[in-house]
Image 1 (cartoon, helix red, strand yellow):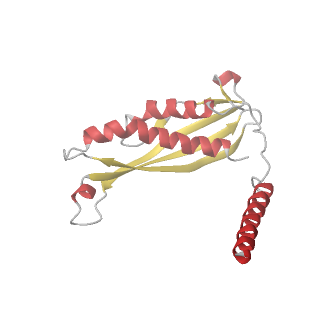
Image 2 (cartoon, one colour):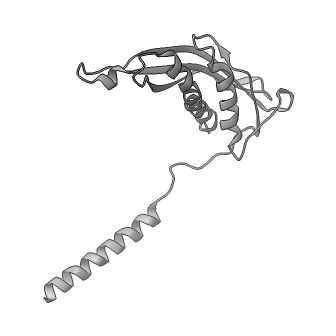
Image 3 (cartoon, one colour):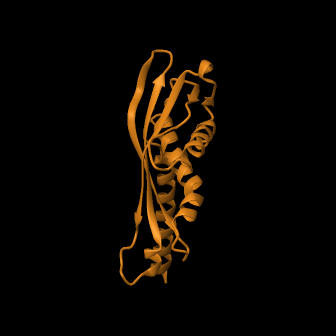
Length: 175
């Protein structure tokens, strides 16, 4: 009985020590750095793909994602310290079937949106990054209709939001 009580007490002490030591040693890798600019102008997205409905949606989503950063304000071009240029370079979709006996996979398409982004420091006139490729993938389910046009069009805001999140990460995460 003493052995069981000692074992239980030792186990509890070891768990407490593990938890306490784990909490004290946790830290984020790296030191957060301030952005070298506090205002940004987001140029209207240029579209060189076969997804014409993506332009306005992506422009609005990118500006919205950047505006959510507490240290950054989206501004007019004349007031901005940095300018972000986004160009949609490619839009592809293809059947996502991987098994012949799975009809649900046969009713889904993978869509891939590819953009090229450049961030210009307006104070120096130099690019912080230029023509950086950003890719976002999603899956569109046809829902038994067999028609890709409707579901693909309905999925465009989701695709644009995902791409905008990736672009915002590129702008905010470089420091």
